[in-house]
Length: 107
Image (cartoon, rainbow, N blue to C red; front, side, top):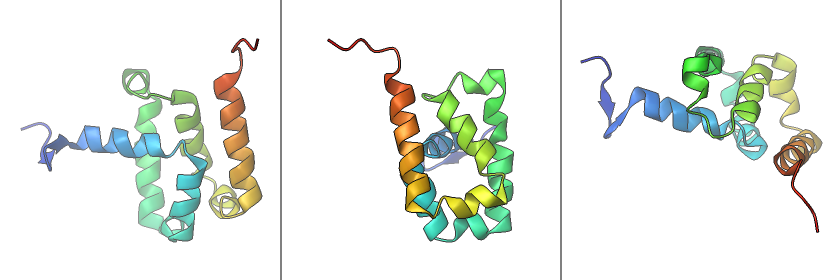
C-alpha cells in the first residue's frame, strides 16, 4: 500500500490540511506559544513540508502564496521568535487581508 490511512485520511490529506493552517498568523502564534517552534523535530517537519512548493503539489493549496511564504519564514529562527510579538501577528494578518482584497472593485 503506497499511502496508509490515518483515521480515514491519507498522510497527504492530513499534511495538506495542516500546511494550509500555516497561512494563518494567529495559528503560527499559537504554535509559538505552545513552544512547538522551539522543537528541532517540529522545525524539521516544517522543512519537510516544503515539498508543497513544488508545482505538482502547490495546485492543491487553497492559498498557495501565504502558505508557501509561511513555510519559508518558519525556516528562520528569528521569525519563529518574532511571531510571538502581537504586532508581528497583526502586521501579517493585515498584509494577508490586503493581499486577498487587492483588485476588488469598491463602489
